[in-house]
Length: 104
Image (cartoon, rainbow, N blue to C red; front, side):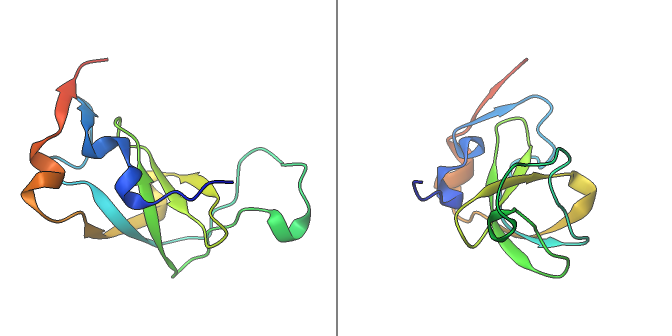
């Protein structure tokens, strides 16, 4: 498994017209509820991805605005928009001004 960082987010480069965060790209989120995958996974319990309520996670943001938290073991887990609150955004004009917008 390779390491994924919030700076790898595709939204830093390109954003769709439906992108929900405007000119900003989230880097850290606070979970408002505990999330587990919708579909059952065939993995051992210690490897099952869970994002716990009240925990801050770095996040990976797709160009359409979908957010995935980066769990401590490096796994990505997509979370619904009502399950988190954005705590930090990527800073600096280089992160947001270089983005290109496109239509789906």
